[in-house]
Structure formats: C-alpha cells, structure tokens
Length: 221
Image (cartoon, rainbow, N blue to C red):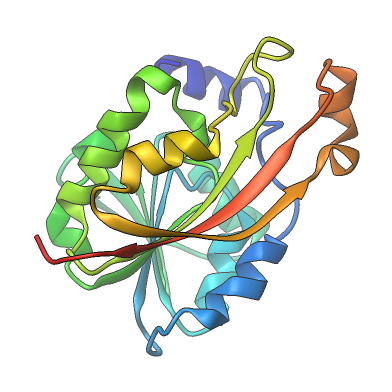
C-alpha cells in the first residue's frame, strides 16, 4: 500500500476498515492503564475514528496523525466540532479543544509533538502496513515517543491466502518479534470475531482473530 492507495480509498469512500463505533476494547482497558488526567494519547493513522472523541471526553489530550484530508475533515464534521487549522512543519494541524490531528505522512511526524505522550493507542495502524513495512513502522514509533510510553495494540489475524489486506493479518508471533526486544508483552484478550464481520466471511474468510496487547517498556533507552 502506497500513500496514493490510501488517499484513493478515502476519495472513493472505500473505507471498510473504518469502525462505526467506539472500540469496546478501548472502553474496557483504557481505565486499567494508570494515566493521569490530561495525559497525552497518540493515535497513529487515526482516520475519522470515533475513538478520538471518546478519549478526549475521558479527560485526555489526543494527538492523531492521518494522511487523508478527507478523513480529517469528516471527523470534525461528523463529531460536530469546529476546528482551528494551522501549518505545523510538513503537516496541516486541525485542533479542537483537547484534540489535535496532524494531516500528513506518519514517517515525517516529529518527536517534539509527543514529548508528553504517555500511551500509543494503535487500533488500525500496524495492521494497515504490509509485512515488509511493519518493522520500519515500529522502529519509527520508538524514535518519536518517550521511552516509558506504553502501547495499547489491537491486531487482526486470518489466513491471508483467503483475503488480501488491508487490513493485513498480523499473527501473535510477529507481534512478539517486533516488540519483545523493548517491551513486556501482555495479551489482554483474544477473540474470534468473524461472526461480527459478516462482510469478511462473504469475502472468503473461515476465521478471524482479534487480539488486544498491552506493551510495557522494559527499560529506558
């Protein structure tokens, strides 16, 4: 997937990856993470997720990065929020209250924006990258977040011979390979969710596993 592919999907409204509601996993597990009021949570490749507004309503600062201007505009419109726009380096920043969304390329995102980040919430970012790009994604993430930042990660796994991504299949062993050198990896829950995604069954999947990980940094770098 090139940047142009994602932009085309938003242009053509081919956004089956967009979830129509706040993640039940986020609502269940965010309170278990020891975050102080006002803490900053980073959402890479955030799209127009309903999770953004929900997190802000819990009293946190939200920083998102999203390539598509269509997605950013749609988020604020659908949430009924006015926004202030300004240039910020290579990004167009849209801000409303505790929500700041940077439109641009994730791999250009500056670490100085995330100096106060306490949690990365990755619901749809890692699984948006093909396997050949996932190590680069993780390495860049580590370079822009503070050393003690935790990650709440949600992945999907399925037989990729039955369906092409995105979202791509990311098995548990690959998560371990990508993160185990720097994080303690805890599986919070693992569910078969194919019955909840009938569209995916229609595309040929025989099983679909969704897993929620909590990644805790082992040492400061």
